Amino acid sequence: MNLSHRITGLTEGGSDGWDIFRKARRLRAEGIPVVDLTIGEHDKRTDPSILRAMYDAALGGHTGYASVPGTVDLRDAIAQRVAHRTGTATSRDNVIVTPGGQAALLAAHMAITDPGDRALYIDPYYATYPGTIRAAGGVAVPVPARADQGFQPDNSDILAACPARSLLINSPNNPTGVVYTQETLNQIARVVQEQDLWLISDEVYDTMIWDGEHLSPRSLPNMAERTLVVGSLSKSHAMTGSRLGWLVAPEPVIEHLSNLATHTNYGIPGFIQDAGLFALEQGNELEDMVAAPFQRRHGIVSAMFAANGVPVVPSWASMYLMVDIRQTGLSGERFAERLLDERRIAVMPGESFGAAAAGHLRIALTVDDDALATAIASLADFHTMLKKEAA
Ligand code: PMP
Image (cartoon, rainbow, N blue to C red; front, side, top):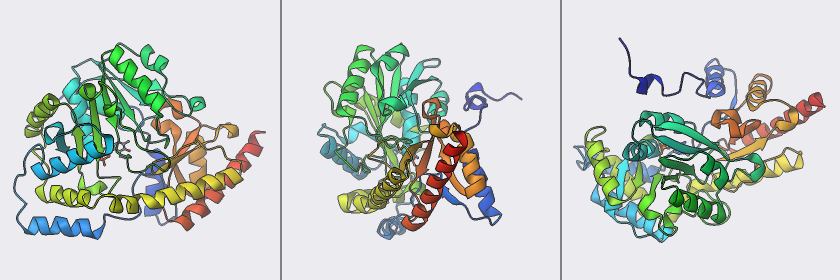
């Protein structure tokens, strides 16, 4: 029996880029200690106060079918948050609650992509992007953001990939930690208007910025009508397992996506939505508490790499740091393999996030400060050794 091309073609049969992650897990299962700096998951779990709100909501009876686009209270809270943070008028009719930002990424592409449409995304990218576009029937087209331009996308590269239906961007960026400048976002706004593209803006790291303010392209002139913003409580509130995210978009998009949700997930559990509402009502305090370790570790690790002559991609956001290992003459994949085999440290090869990040490593700052510092000292030493080997 044949399966659909939609399903079988999702990853185009290639590696999904997670080989190092799986090998690290396997080694650990065999009892071999490995410092795992691969995955973007907080070392501290969801705050107990949020879990208590979840428990209270469930015991209080919010266990039936919940409103499909999301509860009115949660959609209001998300709309207010977005309006407050970006200065752009936003109402509950601009919001649909989704099972995580990932489902919002799929919903966004489902809303605007016809079969065979070219859907652009900036490379380096979060690993699911091309598969998500293909799941919605689109043709996934990477647009490189270049290492020598600090991984800021350039309009000439976007233009070269047109015509297309949409462009997906992600700032603060996973994997690079780079935040797009106002100039970059202005340029992107210009090109998507000129080329009549939808813009999908993945902003799930918007609370993890260490310098400057988050700028949402939806707030730029004439952009709200063509921009779909992906948000999530996964990163901001350490709620990855609760699967709670949203899409902010023009009203007709939300109407149609509510219809799609009726025919797919049929809403998000009410007690999870209530916990999310509680989390948002806590304001900055909780978010700052969740973000603080990553900012601190970003500082520790940057200083250690600088002291040891390991080039780092200048960045000021997210849970990650990227290092440039091209001086060793190895690919990111080979370096990461050897680092795992010889030093028992697991990091993600840049290649896992697209061709534009080749020769780099993504380091997730997701273990405690002491363990992280020990691992980074070893990584820096390994880098020096490989550089000498290459000379
Ligand atoms: N976008 C980016 C850039 C991510 O890094 C992630 C998760 N790592 C997601 C979206 C999806 O997150 P979630 O579905 O947990 O909200």
